[in-house]
Image (cartoon, rainbow, N blue to C red; front, top):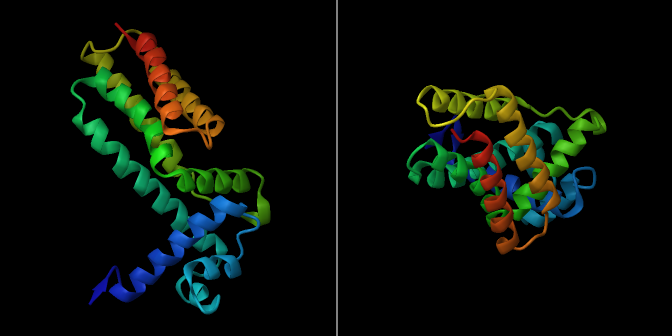
Length: 200
């Protein structure tokens, strides 16, 4: 049987390679994450298995990025969906960003390494940044709708969305390797700050 044009075996092998790539990039960084190291971690007999499933390192890194984003999104949306009211959802959004770091630390380290490589144009790496811009746009829309409903006060939703996402990213980057307790406390304090800033 096939899913997305691939057999279940092929899909499973791709997932295995992506998982190994996440762990390898998290451990040694993007530049040092060779196909040989990824193959070894995945338990593959040769790098040819990676080349069979991915056109090259950029193709693999794109799959890695998509997997990280999908994992983080699924983790966060469960908490956000359980929150009642927009202020509570905003708190859940901010705090769950920190919780996902505690739950999936390798994913975070891998993503930070990929973003750093893309910003430094290491080896011509091209990473689709539309996920990041879409995140800001969704938050801006949520803030704007909250203002219209009287749940939030007066502020520029675009500026606030940028401020919130920028603060989350900076906090996540600065807390790499921190304990779950520290991450939770940091997330709660950041949420308190922005709930005050957006209050009616």
